[in-house]
Length: 224
Image: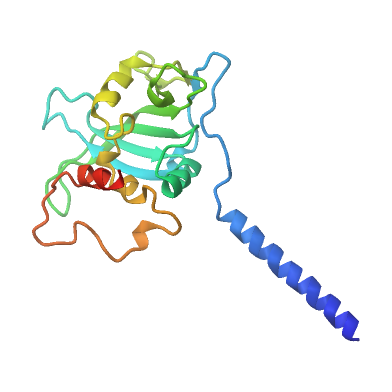
């Protein structure tokens, strides 16, 4: 009877360990490559990116600047594996893909007051870090866009845009490639490690007299 009890206990123990392992695996992003290329190094238009990690939104309405490059809104997403890597290591892994979805300006009125609200989607763009595929690009980053305004549709693939985009990123992005100075979610996650920064009870903006003071520049300096 004792032997049977021990065997049964062992089976239960193994079963519990397996369940724990399965649970941990379910909560851990798989080492998946989200950037898929064809034989000519054209990036196939990313799928399901709205279920990725939401980096944030930039608003650049033409009413504020008639010469703005990307009007009027940009919703930005990063693949979950690369976000997890960024949070652990504080740097971009090879294969990182960031997708920017552009939207037209929408309504300017709401129940809380006048403002700038999102309208219809019209463009999908992406940047990918792939140093082997693009060895001549700064840190291996290349850029892609899918809107065909003549046909009013999105293309299935995009050729690399190269210096057409990198010239701006290299001179104005905070780390030479990614404009994460405009995305507090990414700032807070940089090298955070285990856990998630949104669970902290502190917030930089939780002060009555808050004024933007180039927080990210000071943040980056502290990381160096």
